[in-house]
Each structure stands twice: as C-alpha cells, then as structure tokens.
Length: 432
Image 1 (cartoon, rainbow, N blue to C red):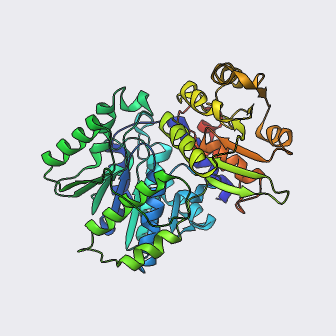
Image 2 (spheres, rainbow, N blue to C red):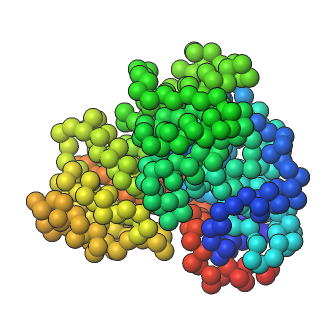
C-alpha cells in the first residue's frame, strides 16, 4: 500500500458518514489491543477554543520534558496534523502501516456497523501514541463528547472550554442539550475544569460532575496577564483554562510556573487569528470562525488589534453552519467583500451569502462573487489588508495557496468531510 492508497482508503470511509456512539470504537480498539489502556489523557471538549487549549496544554507539558501526543481535528492541509508527537506529524510510512494493520480488523464488522472515518482514525491515533510511548496525550473530541469516539478513554482530567451553538443537528437546539453532550466526557471521580460562562450550560456541567463525584472547578472571570503569541483576548481565557488544568494535575504531573510560562510563550496554532505579511507588505489575517460565537470573537479581536482597519473580507462558509449570522457579524467590518466557495461538498452558495452581506453592510454594494479562493486572492492582490475567514477548510486552502505551509499532499483536506455523501469511489476502495 502506498501513502496515496492509504489516504484514499481513509477517504472512502466517509461513505459511512457519522455514527454517534461508542460501540464500534470500543470493539475496534479491543481488536487493536486496547492501546488506550497504556496511556494517560487530558480530554478536551467544547464548542470553540478546543484546539487552542489543546495546543497550549501540549506546549506546556512538552516544555516540562514529557513526550506528548496531540490528537485534534480537523486538519488544515495534511492528514498527519491530526496525530502528532511532540508536534511532529505522524509520518507517511506510519500512516500506511497503521492503515494496513487496521484494515483486516475492519473486515470483522458488518456493513451496517462498519466504523466511520473518525472512529478508525481515533484508534489509529491510540495505537500510534502507545507505540510512541507517550507520557501524556492531549485528546480533543471530534463532535460533542458523550457519544464521540474519543470518549472511550478515562482521562486524568476532563476539560470543557465553552458551550455555544454549533452542530445543532447532532447535539440539540438548546445550550442545555449541547452542554449535556459536552458534559458526557465527565467520568466518575475525574476532575472537571471548564471556562463555560453561560449559566444554563454551566449548571448542566456542574450537575453532571456532582452526579459523577467528579471534582469541579470553573474559571469564569479568571484574570490572565501573561503575554501570548496568539492574538485575541479569548486566547487569554483559553490559557487560563490550560493553566488551571495543569495546576489541578500538579500532584500527578508536577510543572513549575516558569515551565508553564515557557510553554505558553512558544505555543503555535495555525489558522486561528494567524497574521501573515507578504513580501509586498500586504497583511492577511486568517481565522476559521465557523459559527456565530467564533465570528463574534473574531470581530472583538479585530477591534482589539486592528482598530482602524477596514479589511477586504474574503468569506466562504459551509452550508450547514449558521452562515446568515456569520455574515451579519462580519460584513459590517469590511471595506469590501469577496465571496468564494469553500473547497467542500458542503459549501454555501456565494449568491446566498451575498444577499445577507448586502443587507448587513449596504455601503459596500455590490459584493463580488469569485469562482475560487485563487480568484479572490488575485482580485484583492493590491488591497493592503485581507481577512480570510468563515471556515477552517477555507483557511487550509489559503495556507497552501500562500505557501505558508510546507506540507503538500494528495488533496487531504477532503478527509475532513463527514456527511457520507461521497459514495462514488468509496465502495470500490473498500473492496480492495
């Protein structure tokens, strides 16, 4: 099996869509030798800020001398971003080997019970981290928490960043229902730390912790004054949450204050308020604001860091996101708007975005609809400040087009699709 073939096989697993529940993951993990039983985890759930908080925890514990696994999603460009050890992406050879090892195990499942892409990748990651003898794994949920494939582990701590509206199709239409899904990662007796400040969501998390006899702490309003390399006041809250988690685990993994500072000073998390200056002097701000709360956070960060700038907004959003709210929040901030499709089968139609943007910011009529991000970048080549946002998929494409990332593979962004709509090549790939 080549690396391209391994990626194609993983791509084919999208045919099985999304199945929430732990049965398949538990069975596959058992067939793979239950590698998670050899590992220690910090499990991180939440609507926004999960990846940044994971990156901060990873950086702190790596600064402390630990061998740290990092499991996150989605990837921006390369599949290997999902599975890292000491911030080194899993190698192509290891991807091929692990796919080859897991493929025969998948044959034991019926078609109706076949593991999904995310379930397979979860077990791949567990096996890899165990092989790599990681001292600690920073373990991000994929969707929700309670029925997410990552929830087969019992961690040292359960971390919930916040609860906002996103993925309502799967998690429910109220903050209480969404919070209940996030709180599903709470295990008996395992400490819970959260930065959630929505009262009804906080109540659900606290009640769940109490029912599980899990020590509970909330860091609502916790001040933070250290300097971070990541832009945005919201990152101070993520950092406070990471610090609270490290302090809560001090008896199990001692880390000094100096090491915490050192780890936070080096944290890197691409595609989230990432500022790029091109040789021409043009500045480009990339951010994956893909829900209403993310758009509000982005708007606040623009006001904080670039108060006198009216950027050219290059906007692309997925159809299943709250694209109307995102347009309403971001359109008034722009001097002009270029709308582009996201590189996904789930992209929202730029025509639909245009109508909402025009209503939200009548001063910039007309908005301009571009056939692609490449076309939008060409259209805005002489503009001094660009903001590219609306989807992490779009941000990943931008990082490739701007040659910011050295990683270039076989169009691996398509692996982020989870709705099972690409059935064409899937069946043939599974048969071989």
